[in-house]
Image (cartoon, rainbow, N blue to C red):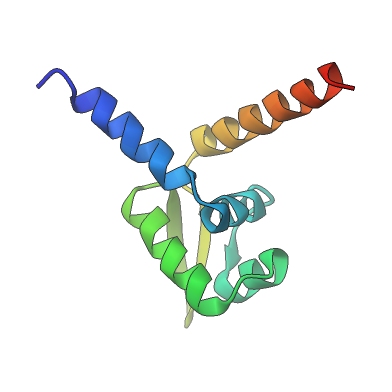
Length: 99
C-alpha cells in the first residue's frame, strides 16, 4: 500500500500534536522518571499523565521499566529526543530572526 509510510508519519505527528504529551516528552528529555515525578515537573494531574503515558507507550514513543512497585518511563530512543530537540531549535532560531 503506497500510503502506509505517510499514514504512519501522520499518526506519529498527531500523537505529538498534544500539549500534555509534549510536556511529558520534555520532562523525559532529562531522563527517566515515574508518574509522580512527571506530575511534579509538568503540573499535570496523575490521571492525565498516566493516560497520556499509556498512549505514548502504545505508540513506542516512551518505554517503561518496573522497579518494585514503581514504573519508570523514559523516551523510547534517541530519535524522540532528537525530534523534540530539533523542533525546539527551530523555534529558537525563528525567535532570533524575528527580533
